[in-house]
Amino acid sequence: MYNIIAAFSIYLLLSRVSSISDLLIVSRDDWNAKPPTLVEPMANPVPYVIIHHSYQPGACNTQEDCIRAMQSMQQYHQVERGWNDIGYSFAVGGDNRAYVGRGWSAVGAHAPKYNTRSIGICVIGDWREDLPPSSQLQTVKDLIQYGVEHGKIAKDYILFGHRQVRETECPGDALFNEIQKWPHWEPNPSISPQNTNNVNSGANSISVKRNRLLN
Ligand SMILES: [Zn+2]
Image 1 (cartoon, rainbow, N blue to C red):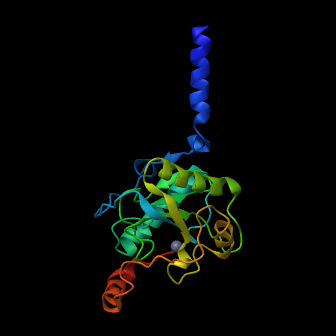
Image 2 (tube, rainbow, N blue to C red; image 1 turned 120 degrees about the vertical axis):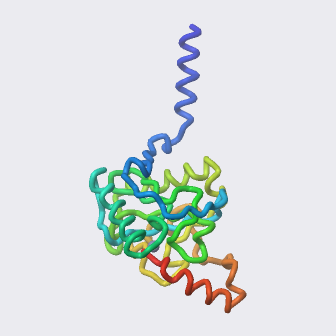
Image 3 (cartoon, rainbow, N blue to C red; image 1 turned 90 degrees about the horizontal axis):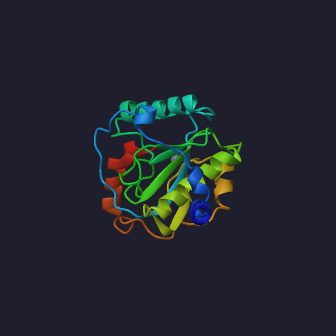
């Protein structure tokens, strides 16, 4: 009898873990990331989540292809653009895995003015016309939920598409239409970035951060 109760308790415990128990997070070691040249710590929880698409590389559907996509994005950002690391906090592949970029607690290079207080998630692929598969979208949602449950993302976070915080087509029309239906999406960046009321310092920081732009 005791065993049955114990087994049932374990069952209850496990069943309480929501869909994010299926979340597969691929570490930097597992995609053979090169070390960052510099890590700037970022405080958690962050108030913003910003969604991107990669545009290029295109969609990947196997772990092998997604690893290759991660490596090519890191190469582009770190070597060709001279950034510290791949720009995004995470990227999600069509293999339904979440790949660690800069991770939860490092300043990113994906959305000027928001890099110090947001998690930037790249949905690997070109989502201007086509939507990512629903399983890939679910992985993005699970990753956000994981971040909330682990105190990395604020419970009342605000979700934006990249195009809402700078002039870009990212994350593509189809994906942008999709995320507008998601919880926490807001139509306008109503909370001003720190430096908007100082035009001169804003201009300086734009020129400094100019080489931090990406999809
Ligand atoms: Zn973007």
